[in-house]
Length: 317
Image 1 (cartoon, one colour):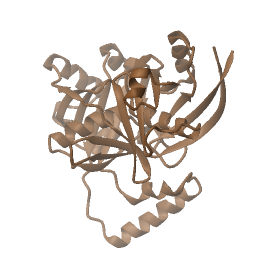
Image 2 (cartoon, one colour):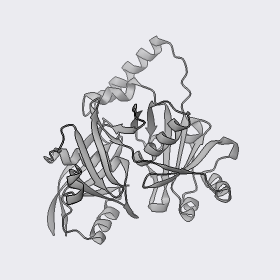
Image 3 (cartoon, one colour):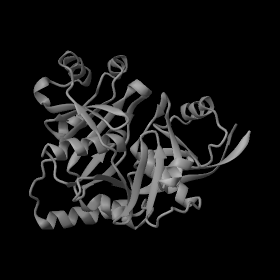
């Protein structure tokens, strides 16, 4: 067995163990598809990545490394939290970008640009294709989710590499209380994303200060860096959950690809502003925070904090 450098990175959180972990094998050279898939099943994480030198063609276009992304059930052409987690692991292992402050990742959807923005890395969301959910599938999906038709505000199939059948629901309470029939979703062979817009209430400033101080103290003992206060400073604008039994994951803690597609859909349709904060993972005891921003050219950026939780060597042949 060959000993290969390895890191496990928690993504979309400044506080270790509250985000979505990704396993990163920093040298995948010589590994077969079968060995990579087998290791991804063994980790039992939503995604495991393997890094390689970029292809000559991609390197000529600025690529710094190539990544292959595996779930327990198969390979993905792109995924969000593995993109940010792999970039963090690559940098900590001594990776040097061709351009300072910019990382270019080669993956199944092509080249993905990752930039340092406001103290955290963010990736440029690949273009998301959108189409309507067929009427003959809609009722079965609603039933599998355990909701009523009137609770669906809008729905759309979104695809930026991974495909998510996505629902905007009537309230964050509806999203948080969902208890889907995962077997039915698996049999449908569909990955489902759900979201609801937070209805912010006016709160007296004295209560906000008190709550912020209380939450900051609660997180102080668990903070891994100075950004931990972010989790207490701002209420999320969107509540998100992701169900992917079709690829062996009943619920994903925090999902970059889904949030990227949701942002393009919801900003483009005027339902969300150009800059917002999404929350995901509460049902699994996580507190993921996804920072969304659309720039003046219309490009959506998806950012999040990252924490390295495990590093060492892994035996893989």
